[in-house]
Amino acid sequence: MPADLAETLAAIAAEGLSATERGQVASYIPELAKVSPAHFGIAVITADGTEHVAGDADLPFSIQSVSKVFALVEALDSHGDAVWARVGREPSGSAFNSIVQLEAEGGRPRNPFINAGAIAVTDLIAAAHEDRAGSGAILRRVRALAGDDSINVDGAVAYSEAATGFRNAGLANFMKGFGVITGPVASTLDVYFHQCAIAMSCRQLARAGRFLAHAGRCPSSGKQIVSPERARRINALMLTCGHYDASGEFAFQVGLPAKSGVGGGILAVAPGKASIAVWSPGLSPQGNSLLGTRALEQLSRAMGWNVFQP
Ligand code: GLN
Image (tube, rainbow, N blue to C red; front, side, top):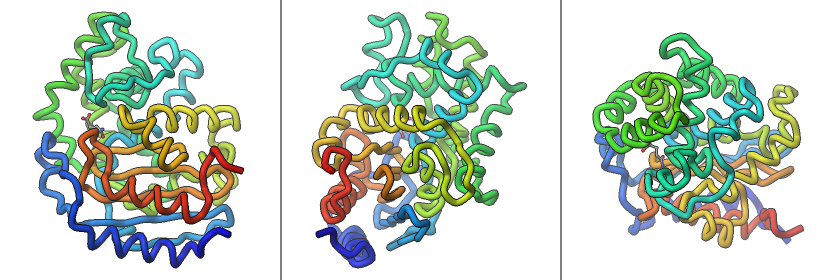
């Protein structure tokens, strides 16, 4: 018998706000290091459109790598299956910013959710637009999905990452050397840093992810965003690659497609049932929200939401 959702969320948020072990806030992007680890928010939108929220669910945070899902949607829309010539569909088992597999594998990143893969996807979007307008295309996509034009890029975060993003510059230059990046490296990175710096609340993120829970169709706008097949495949990638070298553990503990970001956000999908966003800035050693992951474990168990169980 599934638990009551409102009660479950209230209990999860109470625990998330008061926990003493909260993980480490990302510090390699100086602007993110300023965020208090005390935050915790969660938003769940069920199939009937009811929005259940608790904690800091309406406070915007840096979505970081959760943006890789929206950039993938944008690139698949504009380039179709040509995306898969640039990037694979296998879990990497490596850290999100790792370069080790790239040399052995001809510069083709394992999947679109590690940094190298996301930069390759962003390069396709950047190439389809004048100058650096590709980040505008990703932002418009996110706004349309969330039904909210107030969503914006946090310029200070984008600048902070651009000033310190040496590893991403390394990945991009390396891929450029293999011909996997075709545009100017500086503009591709600029678009990538801006997409990562999009700021959203849990409520906005859960709204933007609803189409993934409902076979590619956003129930609130009635629009078919992607085909059911594409939605299923994006979910498959989120399940297998969405948490980098902790993706197997996340599938084991939570059993839902989900994508994390170093801002501490996670977007998770319970197909047919709910779109879920959780935020707590403290991270595990693999760069995934510590309390966010714990909250999703509790929620999926309490509600019986798990793609591996009927
Ligand atoms: N912008 C971050 C980076 O490229 C995103 C990483 C993440 O969220 N895991 O390092």
